[in-house]
Image 1 (spheres, rainbow, N blue to C red):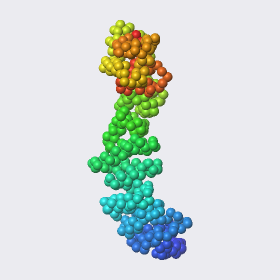
Image 2: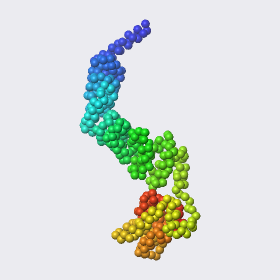
Image 3: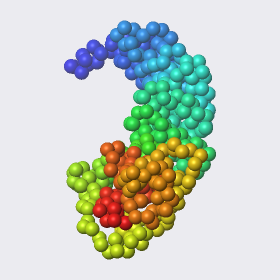
Image 4: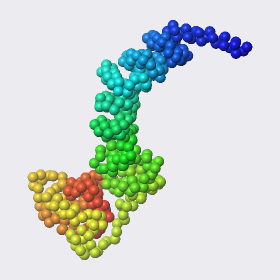
Length: 441
C-alpha cells in the first residue's frame, strides 16, 4: 500500500520532467539526465530538447548547462549527437567551443581518420578566427600525429604558462607515439621542438616538463639519453640544467651508482658553472644518501689538496724536466707545456697589437722576475720560453693570485696560455698546490 502511494506521488513528477523534455525545456541537471536516458533509448525528441536548450540563454540557476549538455553528448555515440556537437565546434563562446571540440574527440561513433581530419580543419579555422587555441583544442591536437598538428601547437607556445604546459604535454604524446611507430619525420620534428623548449623556455618548470617528455618518448633508452645531455659540456646550459633536474628526481627514487661515478668525474669540468656544479653536488648527495655539505667536502677533497713539502728531486732535475715530472701528477702532458711555450712566444713576437691584453698580462707578470726592466727586456725573457727559470710560475702567479673569480682566472689562463678550459683548470690547481716547488723551476 505504501509503495503504491509513493509511486502515485512520483508519477506526476516524472510526467512533468518528460513533458519538459518533449516540450524542449532542459533547464537543469535533473532534466538533462532524463533527456540523456531518453536519448539512449532512441527517443529523437530528447536530442531536439538538447539542441533547443543549447540555442537559448542558460537559466540563472544553471549557467553552465550548455557545457554539460555538450559533455553529455560525447557519451551518446549516435549520428544525432555528432551533428549537434559539430554545430558548436566553431562557436563564438570559448566554453562551448572548447567542450564541443573535446566531445567530438571523445565521441566513439566517428572513424579515427575522419575525426582527426575534422578536428585539424576546425582548430585551424578557430585559430585564424579567434587568434587563440583553447586547452581542449590543445588536448585534441595532442592525439593527432601529424605535422599540421605539431605546427599549430608550436605557433601557440610562449603565450601563456599554463597553456605552454599543456602544449608541451601534447608534444610529448605526439613524440612518444610517432617515435614508437617509426614515423621518423614527425618524431624528429617533435623531438627538435621539445629540445628547443627545454633550451629556451623562460619557465624552468616548462623546461623540465619538456625534458620529461623527451625521456618518456625515447622509450627504454630514455634515461641514458637524458644522462648524456647532463654530461655534455656542449649542451645549452638551460637544457643541461633541466636534464639534470629530471635525472635528480629519478635518482631520489632509484639511485644509480654508475651514473653517480660519471657525475663525479664531470663535476670537475663544470666547476666554473657554479649553479650547475652545485646541482651536480645535490644530485650526487641523493645518489649516495649524504647531505649536500658532506658531498661537497668529499668532492673538494679530491681537488684542493694541502700544499706538499718542497720536492727537491724536481728542483734538481731543473727546467723543463722538473716541470714535466711535476705536471704529470696533475695529468698535464709535455704537449700542454709545449703549447704554453709556443703561445707565450707568439704573443710577445706579435707587434701588430702592442696593447693586446694577453701581451700586457705576460709583460706585467714577468715584472716580478726583473723589477727594474723595461718592456723589451721582459720581452727577451719571455722569448726564452718557459725553460727559463721562473717564467711559467710568474705568469701563473700573476693570474691566479688575484681577487678575481675562479671563472675569470680560467678565462685568462685560456687566453694567455692557449689551452682548453679543462687544461686551464688543471694549470690553476697545479699552481695552487705546487707554487713553492714551481717557483724554483
